[in-house]
Length: 181
Figure 1: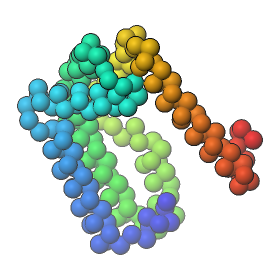
Figure 2 (figure 1 turned 90 degrees about the horizontal axis):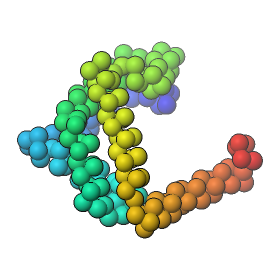
Figure 3 (figure 1 turned 30 degrees about the vertical axis):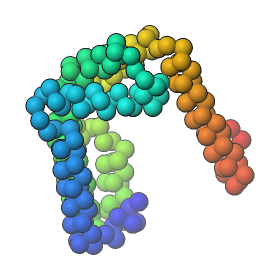
């Protein structure tokens, strides 16, 4: 990536900043608009839609588990938004200040590989709590799955496994070594 990113012109970097601003505006409208009750409802609907893709229609009890989890972290999306904007500014600064591949490569690698070390203490703490709550939500949902929901989840995983086997076979056909070859 560094050889390409080092060639970006000031106009292209400005266009990237504008794209970030446009995406951030959309994010803010979607996740930060309205009062806390509305924001929780939007986040719960978003998570419910994701779970629907995996297990199908959720029961009222399962939907309540989602709402309860989201309700425990009302400030998560606002802090996530702040962190997102901070990282975008860092990225643009990194690109503006490091115009050669030799300078950019190690800094870009650090930026991309060690991204969690740049989190603010507040966000890092909140994120760990949210991730733990999300794991507990998945475990709680698992305990409430109907046989039809469980079948749908297994079919989804099987579909992914098949896709991965196909991708691994494609690499073998192309002569690329894989752990499966």
